[in-house]
Image (cartoon, rainbow, N blue to C red; front, side):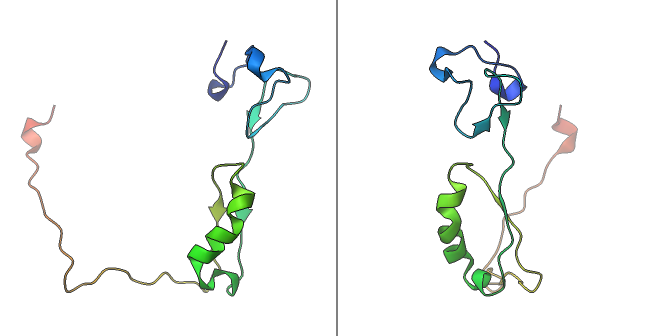
Amino acid sequence: HKSAFSGGCTSDPAMEDGSAPGSTPPTGSSKCYEAREAPVFRPTTKEFQHPARYIESIAEQVRPYGICKIIPPASWTPPFQINRNTFTFRTRVQQVNYLA
C-alpha cells in the first residue's frame, strides 16, 4: 500500500474505515485521507500575559493535532532572555576550500 504522507490511499486492514488519527477522509472515498489544518490561536493580551500558562491551557485542544499556531497579540514583545554580560559563543573558522 502507498504511504498516506505521499497522498496515496491505504489498504491497511487496521484502518477499516479509511481513517487515521488526525485525518479526515476526503469526499467520495472511504480508504483515502488527507491531513487536517492545524488550529490557529489568537490570544488576547490578558490571556498571553503568561505564555507558558496559555500554552498549557490550550494543550488538550491541540493534542489531537500534534501542532498548532499561536499568533501573539500585536502588543506583545518577548522579553530579552540573554545576559549580555555572560553570554559568549565560540566562533569557528570554516575552510571553504576543503568543502566538497
